[in-house]
Length: 388
Image (tube, rainbow, N blue to C red; front, side, top):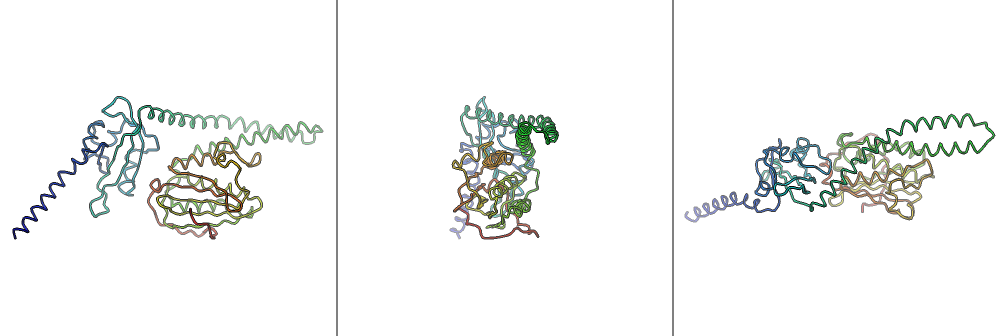
């Protein structure tokens, strides 16, 4: 009996010790730790957080002057991903810590806090780790501002040039009609060359405007396989007209979901390029799956292959297509889109002929898996190579 009582007292003492010791462990961390509820109200901060961060009882107040370096929709929009979807989020932002006068780069890791043995999320744990030195922060912020300004400027320039170019092209077309029966072949040749150049400019501006309108919230959240299916449906007529057989192989039916139309744009560009690379027909294979912690999307064709310097295909305005058939912007913008999702895109020669484009996206950058909706217009399914 005494032994049982002593054991119970020892167990109780250990429990109290653990309860009292946990905060002191967090206070010893060199990183700041905050715990907030689904409304953003902070109900715990460790010693480092108290010394680093400004006073405030909620996340919007504490991070009111923070400058996020990637898309951030505000805590009211981001917290539901943690509490309802049990998703881990990561952000980079520049903040002015209480310990210094200049802003520093910090990384925010936002993790769901679950009750022991339960899937219920009771809080959001925000771990703040100090990053690069001040010079690197300022340089990164400056680059970010320049890119944002350049994007806005490009959109404005494209809008301003669109109307006069359209007018010039119309007058060139009229002049070509007037001179259709003229004996001077040089004039017609000059006009024809001018028209080709103008059409290329119109295509470049149109592509810039198309991508500038792309936003992450444009499409509903969709399973990645559904995104690929939609793209296959949109290029079906072009594939049939070119004698191209399309084969899809979905290794995992329950793929993560994504928001927005950017991945759709990427897949659409890769598949259209593949069809263009097979002028005499061929086979277009699309494979999706999960490898380790990454989503893999592979688009391969049996076309004309890749140029000698493969890395150049992702450079802006580089194209191997005939004049007037390509702007050279598609792959460059696709690369930017995938890198914004912390992923990669690369191209390798196919077996024998053709090309293979592989997109890799970390699962953490996507949303949680959802069942794949069965569609009536399923693509033609065939054998595809195993994922790397």
